[in-house]
Image 1 (spheres, rainbow, N blue to C red):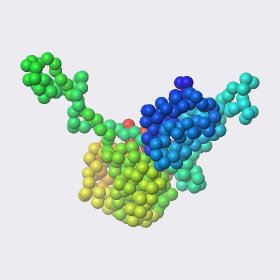
Image 2 (cartoon, rainbow, N blue to C red):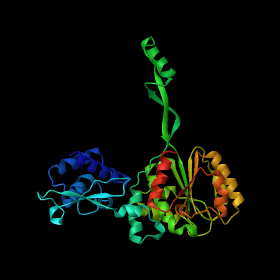
Image 3 (cartoon, rainbow, N blue to C red):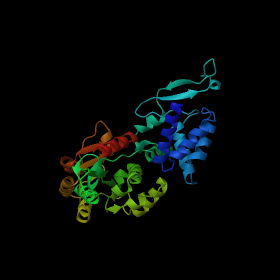
Image 4 (cartoon, helix red, strand yellow):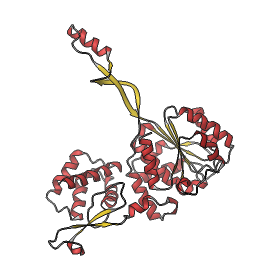
Length: 357
């Protein structure tokens, strides 16, 4: 029963990350239903989850994708993260059962999902890229917290003079000292996605990652496309469905597969906005057609404002990579992190950096 609860809980968290509103009550309903069914029958588990966890017609295709990704195979398996092996439960009619007819566990050397995690998205087939995009939509994007100026009541901390005096005036004596502490808020993230011609194989995947960021913290995330023009696409990426969000964003970007003038665009951004206290993420290969000195000057301003400046370069994932382009050489002195952006594993690492920045 404990294993069943862990499996169902992990699956529900996957659904929530994909946008399905599976709350605690629906999860309990699924567990009650599975108590009357054969949990080794994938069809019964599928329909039990579909009837209890899905609330609207829009949830059905997301449920199907998550079920296939989470339980992929002929039998349900407990999803494990951070490992290179999976466990499949083989029934007796598959030739892998024990003499008593009970299911046995057979280790597999590497799952398809684990292989795709480390492959370059530019070299994937359309079907493989679509599968990586589905896994990106289910990626849990944590966010580092920062201290807010607002306060909240607390058992310990600084003295809350107003509440203490107010209660003393009400009762006629100081019966108890009240305390307060600062609240915390998710740290803001500003993401710049290079949509120039040299970044065309990675631009769609980067925007999929940006969509997952926006969906996780809509108020604390801003996304801009950079190429020959600076375009904000945050509003378009707030749509619940990743495909619709990407279509709207592509319509809003006028310079798709064009050139790159990062220095001029960062100068335009800094003239209109501020990145003070935010985590600034720049996803580009560094092929700057403008003046590298201008790019370096604007990145120096950004680094002084930002809490952390991270550059995501898809070519960084290769062992023989050297930052020799003019844009990268101008940017290196001002970067806090230079990370890869060529695979699902690289985006998982980037998510971890955003969560612990």
